[in-house]
Amino acid sequence: MSGENQRVDAPRTPDAPPPAAGPPAAGPPPAAPPAAAPAAAPGRLRRLAAPVLVLAGAVSAFAYVGAVDPNEPGHYPVCPLFRLTGVLCPGCGGLRSAHAFAHGDLVTALGANAVAVAGYAVFAGFMALWLVRAARGRPVPKPAPTPAQWWALGAAVLVFSVVRNLSFGSALAP
Image 1 (cartoon, rainbow, N blue to C red):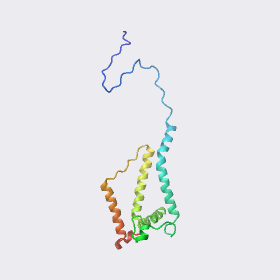
Image 2: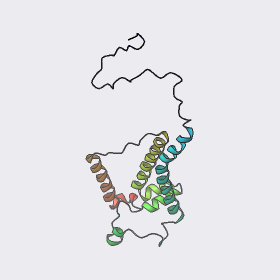
Image 3: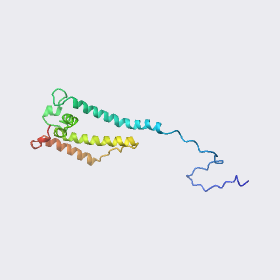
Image 4: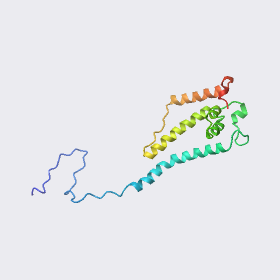
């Protein structure tokens, strides 16, 4: 054997792949794939499709409620709980709140349903996070509230519902 064809094998670990057989390929390295810019646009559009569609649905709903006034009778159904019992549920005043919010009247929106306005803020924050992370190609972390957090949210909504139905909490009633 000549010195050119002799090969010294390095010790292998059990997980290492076997060495490539034959001499290394001579010549230029393989050509890189074509520029990725045209292929990146469809990927970005696909990532943004879901958050943009959800946002478009929410904007459409607010535009409809902003155009069709819930303060005028006959446009929307009456809350069944309120109709049957006279008790305001946590959602009562939500459409009036959305109407005021769509017209930029935050004080009236808060007066109609403060919980709904808090929901709008949470939704807006989540949508901003989702859009930014989708544009950057990063996943949106799934919210995973603990049971204690769910109970706290439920208790807060229950307290809101009870207080708005009492005489001293009439400021929270729509």
